[in-house]
Amino acid sequence: MNVHVSSVQWIAIGNLSDIPVRGARCVVTPLGKIGIFRTASDTVFAIEDHCPHKGGPLTQGIVHGRSVTCPLHNWVIDLETGQAQGADEGSVETLPIRVTDGDVIELGLEPATLAAVADG
Image (cartoon, rainbow, N blue to C red; front, top):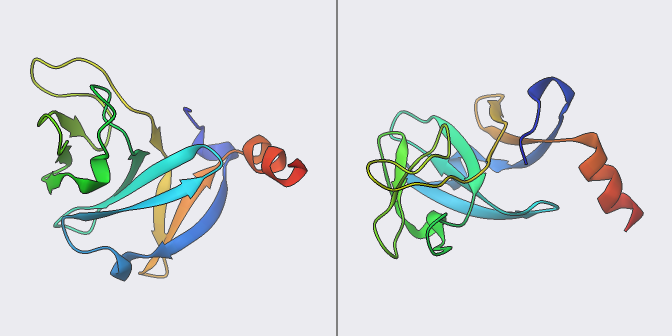
């Protein structure tokens, strides 16, 4: 699911104010469930919403710093890289995301993904 930022189409998916500080929301996209995370400094990240260990819903985990801890087995996932931290191994995909106009969250999706959805 690695997406090249230069070729993505930005899709508005909500507002920053909809996500609590150090919180998350899950959005369903053509690529599956994506977790949108907001840190204490209002940085926003988008990663697959399943832990690489046992598939726990990362959006139900605890956001701390630039990481999230899975609610099932306490694996810590780096929100920027999607990599498991510490002695754990594995990763989740990350997606391009940005905040425009100070509050609008936009997720970057490849045009081919959007076209496949439109074709049904």
